[in-house]
Length: 229
Ligand code: C5P
Image 1 (cartoon, rainbow, N blue to C red):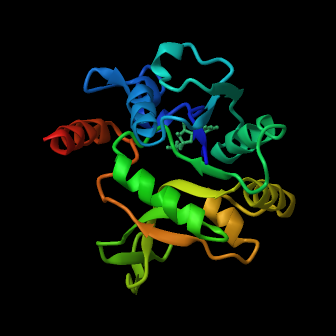
Image 2 (image 1 turned 45 degrees about the vertical axis):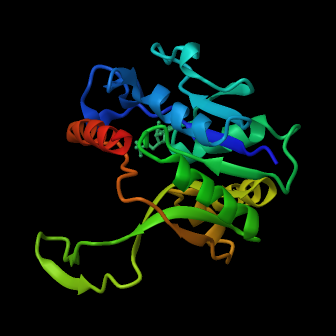
Image 3 (image 1 turned 120 degrees about the vertical axis):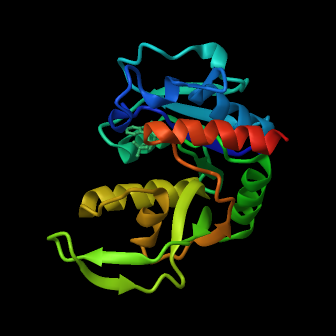
């Protein structure tokens, strides 16, 4: 079965403080967006891609998209709005039972192996699944005034990564319900959880980092080089 890929790439990347959105900064000689799409294409060459781009995007180059079957959809105000737009755009073509994998454009180091394992977990699970890694640091909660209020047990805590994959019908319903109820949604899983479901955690690689700050680009170059070695 051909998966659907939704790649939100409509962020302005303000935390980078760069002259262009982070998805267009060069990473080992190619834009981050091109690197991320190349990794997705390596794992899922026959996937159908929905790429969310800002309406005023001045840097996008269609040649950076390796997929034969893809469409551009307008980004929304927040990441979740971009994903909602993508799901609406494919409503006539997607069946409720189709697997949809959502992957941040800012995660170019995801490996084909993790992508395939995530897809297999999505196919095998009635709810859906996400890549995640166990928390390694000791976790502190602050008191709101710069002091430690508590140390949170890190056992059982995970970092949520992407991709996150769900059936089209469930994901669309979950995001619509979250919007209706005013549930804050920072990833797809949280919207599905708000319906009472428990997505499966698929242990992924720790080097699937999200490029957010300038030093992340340096790290990502090292990671890509190490993965190629
Ligand atoms: O800024 P942040 O790293 O949290 O963004 C996560 C992903 O969501 C990025 O791939 C970014 O391009 C995307 N995004 C989007 N539409 C927005 C904001 C972010 O597609 N309005």
